[in-house]
Length: 83
Image (cartoon, rainbow, N blue to C red; front, side, top):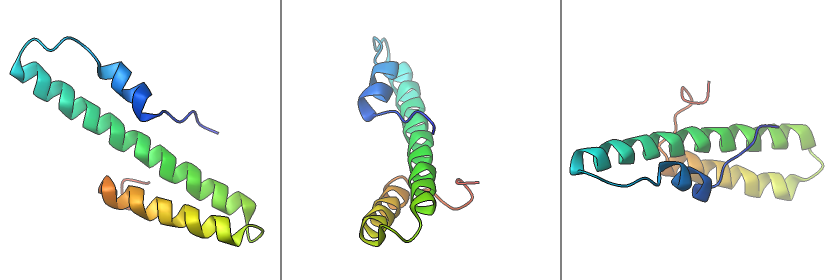
C-alpha cells in the first residue's frame, strides 16, 4: 500500500513565508497540483481495496465508489489522469 497524505501534510509542505504576490500564486499552483496528485493516489487505493475485497462487502464497496465519484468530480480527475 502506498502512503497516503492528508490535507494537513500537504499544507505543511507548502507553508512558507509569502514574500510577494507572484510567489503566492506559484505556491498556490504547486499546492493544487500536489492535492490533485494525492487525490489520484486516494482513488487508486480505494479502487484496489474494492477489488481486493471482492463481493464480500457490497455495502461498503458501494459507499467507497461514491467517495471515488466525489473525489473525481471535485478534483476534475479524468480516466487519463488515473493511468
